[in-house]
Amino acid sequence: MQDKKQRPYAPTPYRASEDVARRMIWQSPFALIVSPGAGDLFEATHTPLYFADGSPECSCLIGHIARVNSQAASLTQPGSALAVFSGPSAYVSPRWYVEDEDVPTWIYQSVHVRGRIEPVPEGAEMLALMENIISRSETRIGGGWELSRIPRSDVDRMMRRIIGFRLHIERISGVSKLEQTRSAANRAAVADELERGTEPDRFRLARLLREV
Image 1 (cartoon, rainbow, N blue to C red):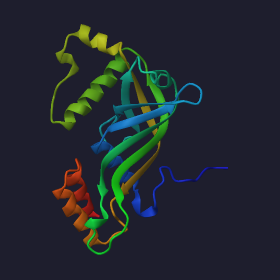
Image 2: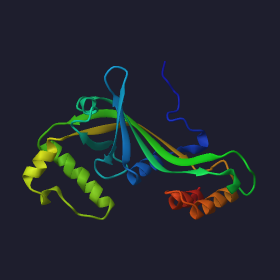
Image 3: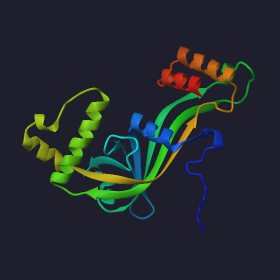
Image 4: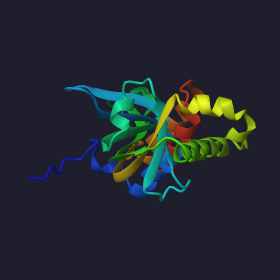
């Protein structure tokens, strides 16, 4: 019997469209990659995952981790994996609502990507993958640093210490819990309180709340 449960769980008002979820990945590429380990264990590592061609429409994510990482064994062979992307989040106090007072809540955005791992072989293909990852990272900050700027001996030493992989996307599920079940007045009040507060993501979340 096919399992039709929603993963990750999210009430209908909070489910993000695939286009929105892909844009969230593009904006916040730092992810938790989870894969099966030995026995009944799961392995997990935080690492940036980028769309291979730089476009949110791409069907493949690329990444790398340290070779000494215990998870490397499961990412150097084909198999299933889950990547979790965490966007902005913040606690909301009931006293912030202007039209009613309810229980506290947490607003946030996140994306789960399920797919198949394709290990990247050592040599020229792995070097090209790392050059791509560096290019995506530099583009995010408006930089232009390239791997060719350091001695080839240093590059070779780095390459021996890492493994690379592609995650071919099979399913993307996004959650965007931004007080959609509240009134516009309550969302605006929460946005105002966030901007006066200290939450790290307050300004981004305030903007998102006003766009709902």
